[in-house]
Image (cartoon, rainbow, N blue to C red; front, side):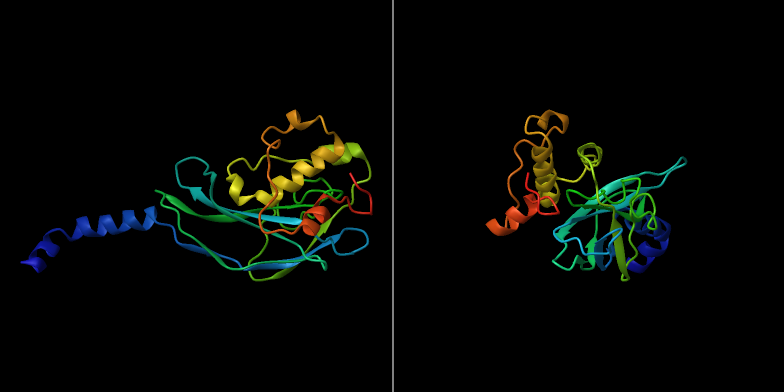
Length: 215
């Protein structure tokens, strides 16, 4: 009886399987690793926030668009090195495909990767770093307060706050360093708590402007 039922409804079962294959995306990204350095000198940039946004791509008749699926952030170490292990992303979405990652690398006093006009553009407009390949990301040093204002970016609104605590915190500290009364220019940053798991010394280092100057 069961075999007859399967034969009779085999096309329905195949169709259901195809639909489920498009509903559940299970894709592994990474690992990603490399070094953040100053563009001119090649010196390592420590305590840079490296933020990865994982995406899916919609399928349709027109041009598809990227939709947030997950995110992870790390800090570069004293040698400028960062490492993000392989990460599996499995959102439940209809007619979506895995899409390239979007990356932000931010350290006050340096051009935001990949937004700044003098940033390292070898990896495309979204900074889609290659998987399992060591890279060196070059950040230009900013020279004026005006350059630092133009360098601020809070467009990653689709990433939940708990997924970008380091990025939000260091962005808030940079705004405070530039103008303590300017929080209205970047809404949502006033009540950003310090990221958990960092010592007082690490938080002080995040607030420090490269070159030995304090806010």
